[in-house]
Length: 399
Image (tube, rainbow, N blue to C red):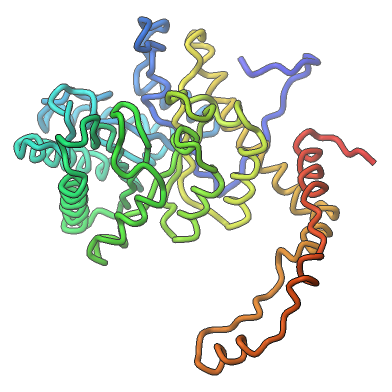
């Protein structure tokens, strides 16, 4: 059932566009609503049913966790059967494989980390497991492979040195990227930051820390590695979503992103995108669209626990619908003469007075005369600008 508007009229889904690369994690749809305090509330959904439902609702692709689809000890034949099933569903639906990832956090063997475990056998197991999933993802044509270090961290800092842990983490990622290169797989790799949960503190908690991590890699490896920010993870750290995604975008490392919703400083809620702070969602979409982002836009969220399987599809429609609504609003922002006038008054697009460094340019800048008191009197109408944005968001125009 489509989401019904208050007036009972048939809703119109915001228009899709040719360059849309919306994807959804299969694990989100197959999630049965269990939590640490309660048992599952929904019937199990197969991966094929999830893929077919996504395709019918205008999604471009899907993402998968390996152990949602095959057990941790599965051999090549068992994995191959699952991959063949997914490939047939892709042929039938036209759905693409956006990304794969390997689960290095659920099984007890990873209770103290995978790539950063003190046990060298556990570290080797994690790398072997990742290679098998990379092979499967490549066979499915995945464009990206995600590493989320859910257990790569600590509660007792004296037990594990972050110097050793992060070095081991880097060695593992470099090994696996070289494996991708040697096998001539075309996929990129992204590292997904998160500050905490399930570990008390997780290594690489923010976009900035992942970018610094990539910068320590050999250049050939680092070129293939990017960052995969998640809305909820940013809010868990109490940071600004637009700033975090913007830093990755400016660095040319925003290969993929995860969207959802989150109230600040709480457990990982994985709410629908746009359900918590519409202004923040709008500003994020505006930044992505204004800068021509054409990578994978994936949703990593969970339906409310109160929903049945029909409600899962309301949830799926809601996420893609909200992105498209925000995109339409973003274009209204760019076309609104009030916004343009206020930004011009602020000087948002003013050209720089400082050129590329040279000794002569440095001398010229030092010789320039400035009047700080006069510069300080320039009016910056941020209150009005923010109010116009709010009125666009709410669909009103007060005179």
